[in-house]
Amino acid sequence: MPTTLIKNARIVNEGSIQPGDVLIHDDRIEKIGRNLSAPHAQIVDADGSYLIPGAIDDQVHFREPGLTHKATIFTESRAAVAGGVTSFMEMPNTVPPAFTQALLEDKYEIASRHALANYSFFMGTSNDNLEEVMRTDISRVCGLKIFMGSSTGNLLVDNPAVLDAIFSRFPGLIATHCESEPIIRANLEAARARYGEDVPVEQHSFIRSEEACYASSSLAVALAQKHGTQLHILHISTARETSLFDNTLPLEKKKITAEACIHHLWFSEADYATKGNLIKWNPAIKKATDRTAILQAVLDDRIDVIATDHAPHTREEKAQTYFKAPSGGPLVQHSVVAMFELAKQGKIRFEKVVEKLAHNPAVLFRIRERGFVREGYFADLVLVKEQPWTVRAENILAKCGWSPFEGQPFSHGISHTWVNGRLAYSEGQIHEVGPGQRLEFAR
Image (tube, rainbow, N blue to C red; front, side, top):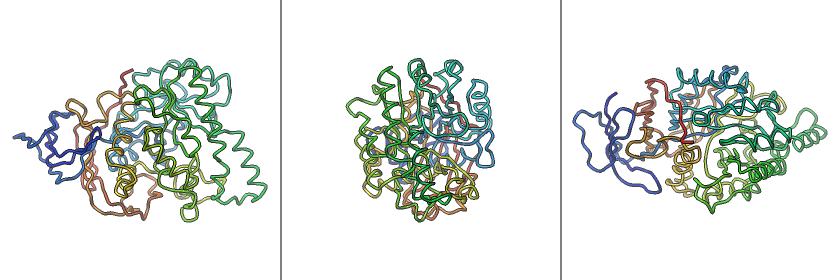
């Protein structure tokens, strides 16, 4: 591997922005300083661009195995590195679901050959696989995923005794999708009674309501408090839920944490009129006041992490009627630039963006030697350049070929991405320089 010297960067790291150079040797950051030199290094002149640690996305759905007409680990990891995401954690709702250790390791084996970014995979839960769950090696697996709300197949865990047993026995991090299934079913029947089969997508935020989210999230918090569980609630979508979280402790001491997703920070229910099913997610995008409250909780550290819930479907699937169109969409290529856009608008500081996209996922999941620009750490690095561009079909790398951001202009773009010291992306070109590494956890 060549030695690389990044010169004249603005390094955004650990709460400050400092001018400097970074020397990469093999897969590590060897030196950080000013006016560095290395006789045989490949020089990359950042020319004042922001140099940040690669984003760590703690919630993606890359669809492999079983749903590869939508996406694969290879195609979506290409989109990830093009978007400045150097590590991802993928969810268990593939076909078949990752309900056994053997099925979970099958996904790791695929990633070891095809993932261009670093990777980890959540173990899946059902109402009847507790003993298999308990065999999870928490030093090599990011966590356990529980769908406490609507999902496909038998991924829904709604047996109170099973939930109590999981929260009391599992020794690692539990990540939850929180929506109350009984409330959603009642709302669905009310919508069907009013509209028949032609329910407008604008009803999505009423069907998957604030009440449904809060009832489930508050249950998860109560279980975690009862058993002292490490709980991480994914994709907070309501203002009310933000009251469940604390900002009085440093992140490394928190037992209950939360994630916000790009779509809940960017869109509101007013956007259903133009975006339709393209922004149909679970939990639903809701009111502008919810969006404002979620951002405020990010700013004041009640919400700890920003991720994407990247969940691609084909255009044809999304073009169906409300009941048939699946929920989710592709976002992993645009998370960093979307958050930099909010920073450009003065809604959040660049330093806070990096904290929520890179530092905090590393701290929360206890990822070994990633998430920061530090000497000795893995060289997962991204140059973000101030250069106007617009999301178009031709520059979208997700296999599905579309994005809810299509037509959106951004003020910043990703110019370079290094994964473990290797240049994986530069100036619009993917460099397939080898697979990423399996994430390891200091637990």
